[in-house]
Amino acid sequence: MKKRRGRGRLSNIKMLPPEADEIVRWAALELREEKRTQLDIGNEFNEKLAVIGLDPISPSAFNRHSVRIADMIRRANQTREIAAVLTEKMGPGQSDDVTITLAEMIKTLLGELLDKAGEAGFSPKAAMEMASALKSAAGAQKISSDRRLKVETELAQKVDAALDTVSKEAGLSAEMADEIRRKVLGVK
Image 1 (cartoon, rainbow, N blue to C red):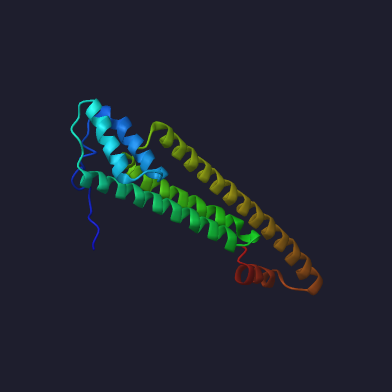
Image 2 (image 1 turned 120 degrees about the horizontal axis):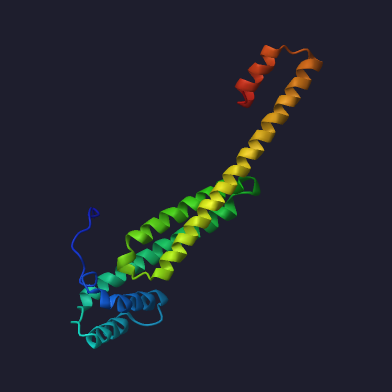
């Protein structure tokens, strides 16, 4: 089945007025906890809507809403599992690669969550936590990149020093040492 492009029609839950936002957030949190049945949460959701004078939401509309939330939770869990496997499989010498990969995964996940924030009923606190996670991921990525650049620079300096020593002792010409730097080591 081909995924639909574009926003599509607004759901009945998205069309609720702003005074229902807290009730929508409450329902999303209840659904995420998975301690009660969807039917039970849907009934209480409608009771809360009635208290503020709004019409109930149909069970099918509430079901579509809960399926979207479940899909987001599943993708978040899959991302976490992938990150755990990557961290376990990659050795200590590949920590920069792990950091960069995980940071990109976090950014992608946060983008997806923000795209669907209205459906999931995210609170301002949740938005702040996502922003903090993105900032941390970007910071870790920068630290990792800076460390890699420093290590590569130090390696290039050591290679230059070693080639200078070897070329003098072994009688290699300057052109031959430069050729080794360019072709074999990739150092200019």
